Image (cartoon, rainbow, N blue to C red; front, side, top):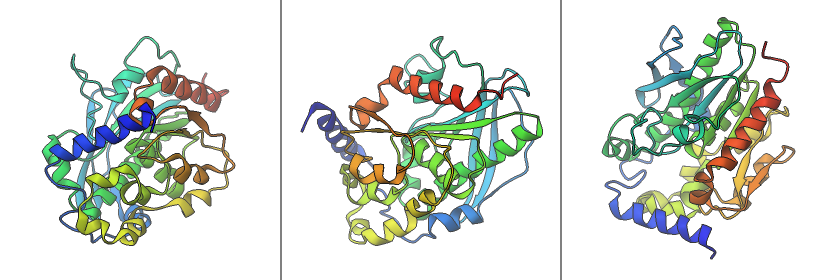
Length: 303
């Protein structure tokens, strides 16, 4: 075990010590992810290019609150990048001691790509950590969290196109990467997708990786039910478009490289020689990946 793998195992082990309620401890009942996406719809909203805006999404688990922040708006005629954060992060926290991925990647002079930039917040990520861990005690709530976030991406894409935006690119890290891939699998309407440290066989994260330490034993006794609810690798692979620039970490013990890379066959896969923790903290490398792929995707779109 190298240091990258060790840090992944150690971080999950430590998280398990403080976790109030394991994943799926309360309920393992859930509709599959494709049904959750099909049954989710956002409440009508008018796009605002400043400030934090709430968008409610109806899901199989009931209404869930999502939100977005137009961090930088250059104009209706410019391409737009939507970014979805990692698990447990509040992307709108720009406090002195915050370290969320959106702030590290984009709230810096090192980000120089001239596109509109929106931060997306998934359900339960503006609340306390306790609210999030309570929510994911039910599998259907976690499935609906993913579906609601993908639905918000689609709602924003539609509003942006109405305003004349020439291209919409979506990117996400870890949890956000799963959301990005989910949108590609069941909507496929954005111009380009940039998932990082994520795949499409979501169930494997919970049943076969070190992340299983955070899952209730009662749920682990039924791994097929978790896979049936969360996996969407077949739908993702069925997309016949060269519109995705994924990034994985070779020594990732959560989003395991050998388990997830097959889902990206035929796509240009970038690989970090790191683990999940060290990969997520490789800010310069992640920023360079998003910047390069975004520039390539919007070439000819900006005016």
